[in-house]
Image (cartoon, rainbow, N blue to C red):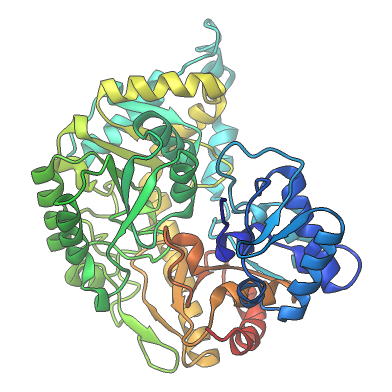
Length: 516
């Protein structure tokens, strides 16, 4: 019988404790029954033990015992001696179900925020004024030039494909338009790669932690995820990750390797030059197919110290001054480029036919602009395009015309975001040093969030407890292929520190109760 991990069930149960009438056991039973009815948890799945689920939800064991009893009396749960409690379902679940990753965008989070809570569940940034200006600058002539055909451009409109190719050429990476496929953001790009290049049961190597949208796409495809490395200096740095991949390849050949070398999500780290060269060496020697996700690469913060020391950031702890005297100066972006040049992909030194680069304008400019892309060989691009046409035929032509204009404003957008995020990062660090003196993190080299260690706490339980007080936050295990990092939180600062300041007392209180 299939079993569901307590951590995954916890993430599926988002919002249960603050919604609906009745006491806590009734609300938990209702939430579990809803998961079964929708098919989010397949009929026949064995639930975690009462003790295990109580720990991860941050409730008493008696609450879970009562909830299981209500489900059993209602015919939704069957206790099997020696096997645990098996959930009965009326829905069907044919494949992997996502874990509520988009909860920050739905009505429940907006309600919580309006009621005095705080939403720290998303790192998405507010849009830049340049997007509105680019929309306003469109003319009838821009659209009229394309009205002579049917409007379907499965690979993307020619002007945008050429513009993206030029973006790479300007960074010294030879690229032609036929190597570009325009997608509806980077998430669709990752999903297409999983569909086209991975078969159920294939081994896929990922960093640990990594982007949870990629984990969902790969799990949904049935991939066997194998993590390498860690997320800090104590784990040996990124070169150790490459060494771990070399050791792994002595026993199994992965179908592909998924990496985020620059402005990694969620840690914010960037590989230094030595680590990048080591990864290139191992990937080339083993002739492995690699997917490099550069979705957040344009959010590199580019501190001078990062460029000099390899962009791995500074180890920080609340109460210890981890500020960087060089922060705020313009410098190289830590990947070999400067403000005016696109970050150079690690895979630029690898064979085109054995690599995919994923990029997007949505992270830098605005999430509502759903324009991403894949850069690969024409053969891989054609394969991905065939799958894409079965989903949406073509991306919005109007969005693509806006994107063409925004490509010309990349240097301006980089400088604007860099200044904003540096200031907000520094303010968030100052806030945590004062308010949470025992919390630890490494100063991010890029991205919109801090990856924080909360010593002694189980952040799965912490997140559940916090939701009951109107605070939405994502525990570290959501970013791990093996449910690791249960002492970590991702704390976004991209919108400023107001939400973090409002949430911090609640998070501190919940951390004391959620003992790991």
